[in-house]
Length: 90
Image (cartoon, rainbow, N blue to C red; front, side):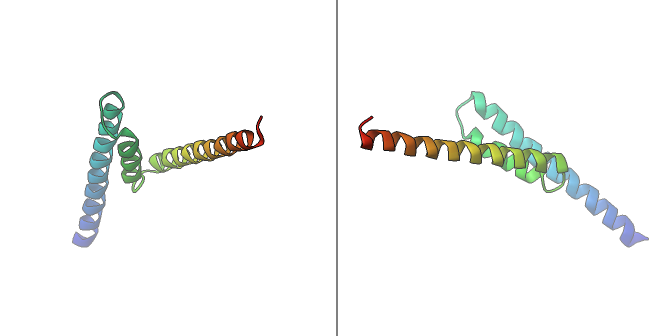
């Protein structure tokens, strides 16, 4: 009985700590969008911390990773296309 109560208490405490730390990092990142600072670092880190316990944060993080990956691949493709045009003299 005591062991079960301890397990439930530990699980709830862990969830609360993860939520507080993750939301704090996320809020700091959002504030850094308007103020100088590395917002693009804090927002994914906050989502990563929240994704430890929450499925919605995991989904947002997955969507963010996909968007960044698509943007980078498009950027590399555009750079290659521009280089081909310069080399061929167009």
